[in-house]
Amino acid sequence: MPAINFPPLPDLKLDAQNAKLLKLIIAIDGHSSCGKSTLAKGMAKALHYAYLDTGAMYRAVTLYFLNNGIDYDNPAAVEEALPHIDIHFERIDGQNHTFLNGKDVEREIREMRVSEHVSPVSAISAVRRAMVSQQKALGGRRGIVADGRDIGTVVFPDADLKIFLTADVDVRTSRRHLELAAKGIDADWDEIRQNLEARDHIDSNRADSPLRRADDAVVIDNTLLSEEQQLEKALELVPRIA
Ligand code: DC
Image (cartoon, rainbow, N blue to C red; front, side):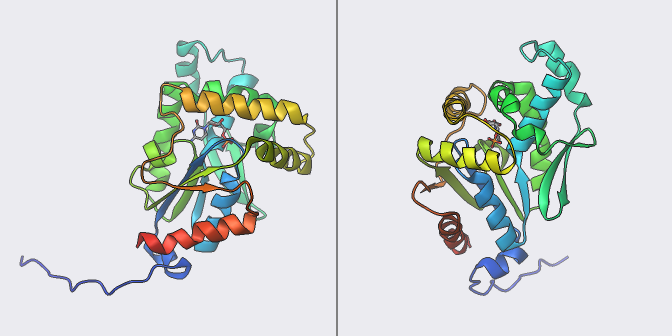
């Protein structure tokens, strides 16, 4: 068969309107509670993309270990448990809900009990292997905004746009405190701050895929930005990746 020579593509201007046709992969990484999920949800909505909350997956695994008395320091117990963990997401009233073995655990996975154990659990290579392979499969559909700690470096190293978010730790603590209060979860400000710092430390220093900025990621420090301003800034980056 003769080769078909397609004419060169017209100079396509990529904006929020036609991004939905191009089905890009957008990766957002950064420190704990710096607004990654707010930004990812905002971008997904604006671009009509799916949103993948990878932190929720590590939180659901942690909840399973806690509820089933699995000693996650024991590699054999972890290997034994992993095949029994099924995680999926559903949209309920326009919100993303995380399901663990058929049960809606969206609220439970945000509690401090889970936050206190999620970083050591997500440092376990067997856990990461299991989650990353599911995340890569979901990304195969493209048209996705994913947030986490290793999205631009490991899960989607070829993402079309990579953003690394950061913000001052006191500002992050206050935002987290408000977010938990809005969900009716009462938590102490100092306890939240300590938890954020401890998680940042473990997440950035673990041996397997530590949190780091991908070389080609754009840094956004949102300490002084409102949700709307950070969304606007991030969407401005979309046309540059055509
Ligand atoms: O985004 P989050 O705070 O819900 O994430 C919870 C924890 O999960 C975080 O402290 C580190 C871990 N995590 C990870 O190791 N890799 C990801 N891609 C996402 C989260």
